[in-house]
Length: 173
Length: 350
Image (cartoon, rainbow over all chains, first blue to last red; front, side, top):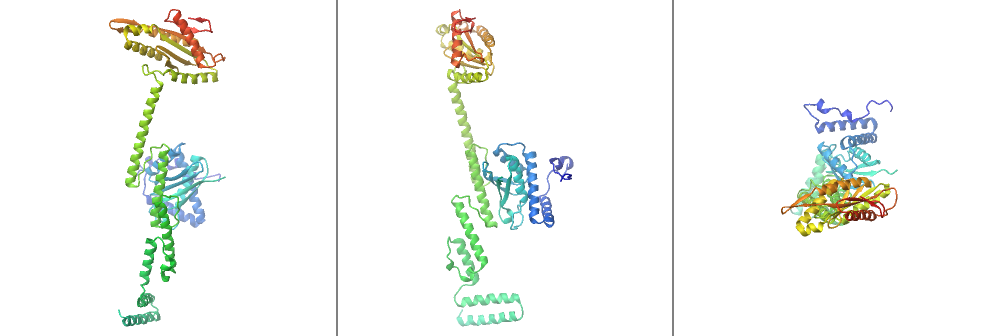
């Protein structure tokens, strides 16, 4: 699409201290989930489940890429990346990230996220729901390694698990 | 209850079941059907279906292996029971793997119980990763979950970190002791050669000049004999200090022998090195030591040589130092307290 109206940039998050001098930068989690849940509903109605998931994944990936550039900065050390990411995610109330496995050489990672922004506390639904998180992690890893990653949530609060677990595999060319 | 009264009670319930069926009352059909079924089994001495089901579930959960024939047919033919039995079997296998330290197992079963176990597995896997990071030298790893274990882990990593730092400090201390002359703080002869050799190699590779200054304190034996070793040591320290003060950070100096010092000046022509040596000579000449009321004047003789970088006259740093030593020898022979520059194998000038 050449003539775009909504291309995202970090500036579009706005000057929150200027715009919300009294309410500040935080809001209730229900509001975030309300927006995500209704988006998912309408997208599914209009484009079908698979396409709705794709859109969520791609959006999460775009968010991960911007988050990496604007929040984490230029980090070349993997341990430093994990530490900065853990601190940022916790400070911003996104979740508690832990590493279960990391193989930089072969491009394989297992992460777990507790108290996840998207799903922790949701009713059991018999399907994994953190599609946006999958994309988010893929976006971060791609920016850090320069390689394409496919991320899949294998355990989720919504399937009765207490921890969301993500497996990331580098995409073979 | 006697068999006859059981029979009578069962007949009444059968009648009521018929009435419920005839009256199209599903709730009563359900109730009386269950009662008829239970009473009929009781008459033959069997347990109720509920009792049998509960016992079967207990057996499946609490026993390692339950044989098919041990489960009553009425229970084992139920698909929900079989799904439960399968899930419990998977959970048991997963728990056994966890107990044996195998953290690689996958548990397909969903739900709270499986979820809690997977959370435990996730914590152990994260802990394993953190331990691996510590073993690779990352002592910033801390665990903020798993209660008392986390406290112990964090304490262990902190103590490892402290021990590592103490060891590094100790190693650095001994390394410095091994390469430093304890009296002057200058590099010792061996360390000077190590650094000088590296500088010489660099000068040859990039065809850059370097100069060597050698100096030897004049009449040092007399000072020692007349005023004692304490004054002798003080003289050595003062000369080393003046030499070091006159050099740049990139220059290398060292204590070469008893009262002999050496300095290497990278990317420095012999003329510039001569000027440096002259400044040091003057500086030493101005030292006056009060020893029991008598003033001791100190002088030192200097020899300077150069590797010019453009030709390959010198093959080793030892050869350049040897030239400076020859010049120093000439300075001593020419009356001491002077700087002599090596200028060819036989010709020297002061």
